[in-house]
Image 1 (cartoon, rainbow, N blue to C red):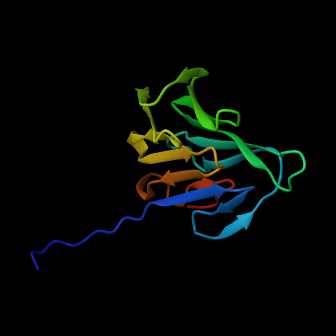
Image 2: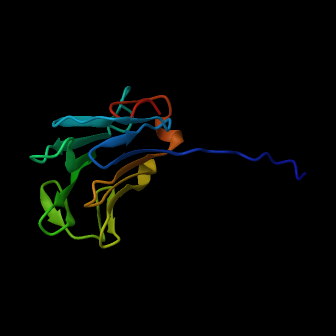
Length: 155
């Protein structure tokens, strides 16, 4: 009524949970039960030079695989690793341990005491990991639409 138009922006996420189950950016679920390192998301045409990699491992006697760690490459290299003995997430930036809350070089680490988040404010993205193998990758449409590939699919 005032002459302005509403705009609608949809951000998207890719989830990994359990042993392991994935949900693509387009909300399609699938299971992938292999023990290896996989590219979850990378840009088809690099603009922001961001890559997210998950390292899975199999637990002896169980069918499936679990998250060992997730690596986020964007200006620097950050890693979230599950410490199974402490039932906690350990965070590193350029191979140095950091304790959330922590911010440096375009990466912000935060925690809920259980789950740890890496925020990339410049490109409106985040990655979170919990000791229960729940991994979430959030991307903003304005930075990544139609320019992703990997286990999470095309966004």
